[in-house]
Amino acid sequence: MATPLPDENPPQRTLARPRKKRIMFRCAALMLALVPFIVLEIALVIAGVGTVDLSDDPFVGFSEVSPLFELDQKSNEYVISNRRLKFFAPDAFPAQKAEQTFRIFVLGGSTVQGRPYSIETSFPTFARIALETSDLSRQWEVINCGGVSYASYRLVPILKECLQYEPDLIVVCTGHNEFLEDRSYSTIKSLPKWIQTPSDWFLKRRTVQLATTMIADGKSSPSSTLSADADTILDYRNGIEAFHRDFNHSRAVAMHYESNLNRMVSLTQQANVPLVFMLPPSNLSGQLPFKSEPMERLTADQLDEVKRLRESARDSYRTDLREAIRIWSEIVLADPHSSDNWFEYGQCLEIAGQHEEARAAYVKARDLDVCPLRMTTPLEESMKKVANERGIPLLNLHDHLEKQTTTYILGNQWLVDHVHPSFEGHYEIALLLVEWMEDTGFVDLPENWKETSRDQFTSYFESLDRPYFHRGQRALESLRNWTRGDRDGPPVRERFPHLFSKEDPSN
Image (tube, helix red, strand yellow):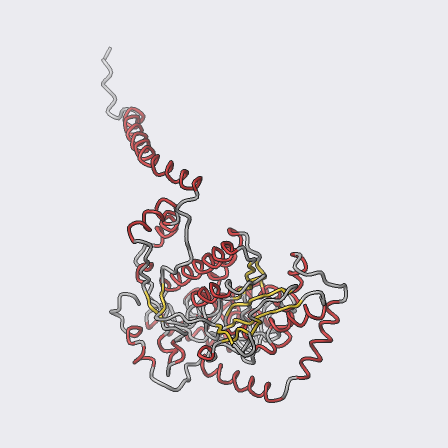
């Protein structure tokens, strides 16, 4: 009987066992090394040391920060400073807060200010009218702190100032202006996408915060220093030429925006002042993308094919709408980065009555706009995330107005341009805010408060003179020219030459 030879392929488990032990040993060693960090982190939490301080902006600084309000000795009121009237509309409140006064500061951009008109027909004013009409037991002050082209990072210093004036409520409506100014974000862009979430978590630990404070002596070094007031790219001649697709930059903008919202929460919680976020509305179906670029990797032949498909789809609009939709679905697959393609696809779907699919296409068009003057989905998600994680009420203005459209696609029915609400839109937003205040317990309203508010609003609206509306129409036309880069003054290439340089590492 032959002696069996040894198995040339022994069972894998005989080799896997030592390897498994090595992996377990390394994991145990790593856990052991983390024990001191975990213990110290727990101790700092218990002791209340090393609290994350989000009051300072790690991304940008300002060449100068001047107060928004200054004391008028004659009227004994705080008024918007004359030097800030280029960006803010005049508003004021008493220096001495009277008893039974409920003081609200509303912070944001031109949507808050009421552009293209002004604060007379803005939702903060309409909210004040509704409160004064419905609850006579208090004195209601609603101060408009809406700055034209003001992004979230410019609102944080204003919030710090407003917290000194005995507010009872802070309202923040921001998100449309985050891409207007030139910021590099070179540090964020250099991080691989996969490492940003764990690194963000790690940097927020108290142990790391305490060590950073001790090493840096509490000083920060922002990556960009901005002017005292908004200096937007579109304020320069042919400004729209400076906008190009940059997904890394867009991701960094969203991170900065989320950081700013968290800083606002920290500041208001430290001051024990209620805060409510408002997610601003944007025009989906009534606004063409401001700038569209094809996908970078497309060859000349592929671009020609996309052009041919576009012409074919447009020829099919009247004769065969279903065929036009099929062709547009091919186009957006062939060139998924072109916002113009997605917008036309959305129009075709809307005409066919496919409203849910049309809305999704319009959102794609908005988010891929190379010149993003409307709040993008990542920014919307950031606001929702911060509100949910920090327990902050969120009033979704876009959703509120959109639900009152027949197609559930927000467009020209409630907005006069790409982002600014109509008079009726502002009034609806005001009612939503006041209704939330009642639900929260800030005000006790009678059953017919909406009807009486509407009557008062109509009377007030009719009291405004004609020049006010004429100025608003001129401002609207100027705003449309601004979005096209049609401005006087220095050329954008002279002001921001690095935005046109491919060699610029931050671009």
